[in-house]
Image (cartoon, rainbow, N blue to C red; front, side):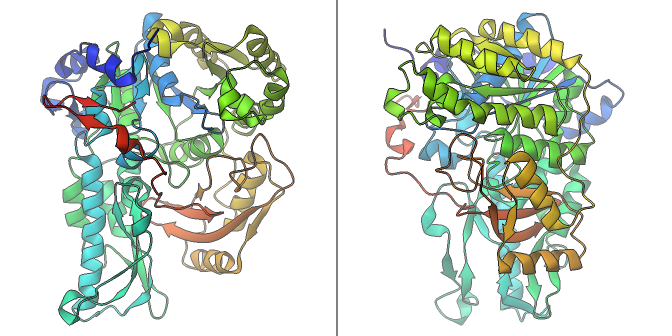
Length: 558
């Protein structure tokens, strides 16, 4: 039997008008700004009308350490929300927006899969409502104003060797990581080294996601540090008088996007990808709306629990004053066997020995959720047809030993019906006591916070700062940024900073090679290993399989 592709399933499923979806959760028509029939932006002023409404339960979906076998975190998030509706609960989804880089690079799409998707799938995966364009435009406006200031006489005395602001583009393009610009003579600017980040790793993306309103956004833009003077004083976007224009470009992008799942569950999709190089969570605005409009708000954070979930708890929840109610850790038998050393082409064969060897990866993620952060947790096994009963039983037994239940998730094949068991366990967990804590205190020195993440979350023996990173830490503390949270930029493929160390490695140290402050976002970015803020395309990009026919119908997204 030939299985339908994700895009075929999405294209064959009828959608409800977005006005009906908005009405189903009580959004008045005057706050709904339609982008066609099936997607809309919701005016952020709507939040002011529902401040007295109680918050719904907040459920975070995270996952084990990613593998080429796939885990299905977004698919599970969508299916769980649909499953909650199946058992009579009012649920709303809050997801991250896909980035064009991986869509055309390695993934071909990021809107869930099978019968647990958000739609219109093609729009969401491509330009959507233009948020990422607006982020890129605001970022690059600031870059243009910075270089123009230098060209026009550099009255502020900016040291062109100490410019930290980079341009950005929403595409994987290693060719742009390091460039020389301003060439071609005096009229074309001042020559200097520069480079591009991918848009979703930019500080402007984080500002968009972490702003509570338009005034907060403008103030955060003003605090962005673009470079330093010759006497090492920071130069901000506010000093360059850029914040007003940047906020104007971001005004509509700040409004959360409303779409729907295949089963008509309301879904906010707004900002936030790439928790291996950025904060990796959807916007505060979207999360707030989901919590106010649903009895259960189901959200996700990027990559594994050591990255996305850690940042969700240590950065976003801290900034919002949120206490999550439950955590779902997504895993697959196939991925765990990969962590146990099985090659990708042999993952469909029962192998209890390899599964047991890979289990520590899942168990460490679970322990982080329950013991480090103090939250009730369930393991969702995203089931594949090749999974055997013996393999599933082994996972269940190991998790039960930690006091955590396992729920089989069959949402890819069955939609919400396949998420009922998971939904029932999530509802039970949301009523359990919790002792939510962050993994570190903001009062610690920068190196102490880095060490806390490395030892508590990654189980490293400690953290090593290069000579350059030590100097940067001292400078940041001297400038008054020592009390900010940490945004770790680390490979998603391992608990360590070495992507080849699978499972749950021990006996390693985390090396931090660079520290920089994102003063507008409100955190310090720590670069570890060889992680890049501008990814490259793989040998065979997904773009090679994506096409459009004469009617405008897209194929190849998955």
